[in-house]
Length: 307
Picture (cartoon, helix red, strand yellow):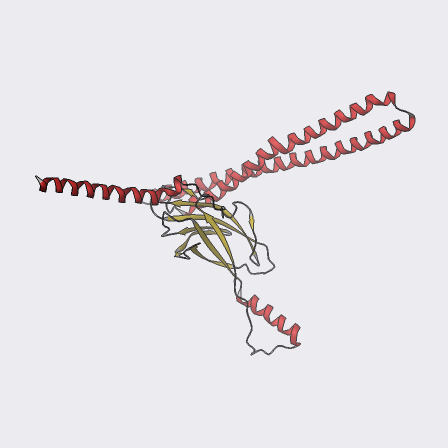
């Protein structure tokens, strides 16, 4: 009997231990979902100019994470803003902010100034990731600048002199788990899909600008005009009770308000023109997506015919 009781106690102990272990793991791996994190969000802003390199402005377009496969997908654009005739190339690296653990980075799409990067081996309990973007300028340009500097300092340059070339500039783009979207369907796609995705992201930003113009900026100008017109009516109604000198002052105020209305109308026209431009740009980009898709359909049709 004692043996059965002891075995029963042992079974309960092991069951309790297993339950404790399972609950602990669940707490550790799901804590980001339910625990409040009052640390400042360190995310680099999306769709904003990122400065810090010599020749390039960076724009972070998108940053997603697949928790099941442990990799991140980053959409990045570069804009050449420097004076170099030869555009720089780029090297990428990624590290955890606290542990400085490195994660492999692979360029899976590159076209013109657009990059899609995959950061792999990222654990589910990550918090902040730093994406290091190194700007590698053309060697001949750097050597030319170094010689010009030596000439300015010494008045002559020895062709055999060792040139002191600067190290490549580096910018860290930061990803915070609270701003990085989780996507379990994330996987490496065909190149044309990324091309379409970049266009879709641009259309998304254009739609936001269109909505701002239609719902905020243009109506605001109408409100301002209505407010000025009301003020003018009030001033005109008071003219009867004014002396000649006071009437002259009121008339000057009315002239100023008419000028103000003209200025607001000019701004309104600028917004309308910008709205039209944005609508046309959106249409052209949608046509570009259709053209890409049509080209892919023709490609697959030709492949089918050759089989």
